[in-house]
Length: 426
Image (cartoon, rainbow, N blue to C red; front, side):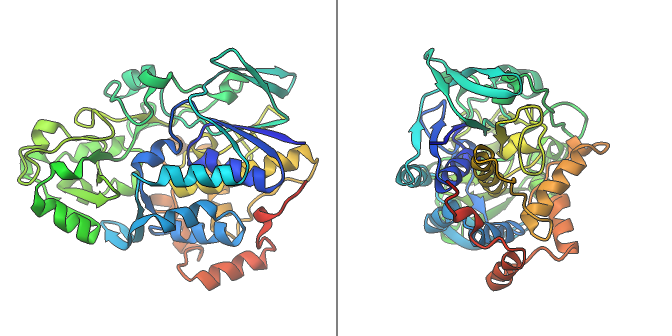
């Protein structure tokens, strides 16, 4: 039986594992912490702007399991906030166990608190991953969804120091790039000033620490916007954010909070003393990241060179998804790339032609465009997403953006990919 090893249990890894299992493989997924979903544990936003289109394309192609799970665990639907329309907010406090159950229902062997420290390979083919326990785990094909944040040293060098973020490197050890261990030279994303990396775009407040006049409308409407005093406006901080779709003037002039179970504060960090000087926030307390008054995780420090089918250049049996696959940002983006990587991993073992999303679909155009832009001047300074900034504008210009489910389903049918990822290949 084909054995697929997925390293990294974020949204991309979970998506890759499900698709590989659907295609008929035996799947082992390794996650170094005690929880799945990674930054998805402090995320919560989906179906905003072009992410609606991408999610519906994925559903039509048979890789919609995780979007259905998000929809079923949504706290708010149809939310509008600066620069974003028709967003849904999944509950970050309940989604992890739901996803774990889906994986187990597909027969995926989920191994938590299991960190990869090295790999073995022969020529251009990986043979096994070596675990921190000393165990060597052999596989036929591998998927690297380890992300691009951490370890602590990178946050110290490129950010504000370790902010004890959701990556939890001090507790579970540093992230290890499978591709880098296989001697693949990786890319590093950049901030707008040319320095390496970019900060995660939001942080979490405990809702019960907020005054009723803040908490009640937040829970009722899903969003609240609080104007900042003039002396606390920090417009120059927008360029540090990974999430360029939120790097708008409104996010510098206001506190934008979303209800994702916690109160999601749409800024990389905000000094606690300054935050508590604002009416309604006198007792504010950060949840994740634990040091959200001082900093956040630094990402895009480990991006693998790969083709549009998401096979990593230089290794025959290694695929990648999520932030490993390009300077892209978001859970929707992680799910659709992870799905393709997991599916193509099985195709590799069967000596089948790889699937590549066509450019007639938003997901196909997105992957191709990101890879093309990364080679252009200043291309590594931009993060790409269906939900805003450069790529969403492209979606609209090319007629790829739609919120009409029937139209999206027809588009997928026209390119012959209806339910393609739902098929057993073995």
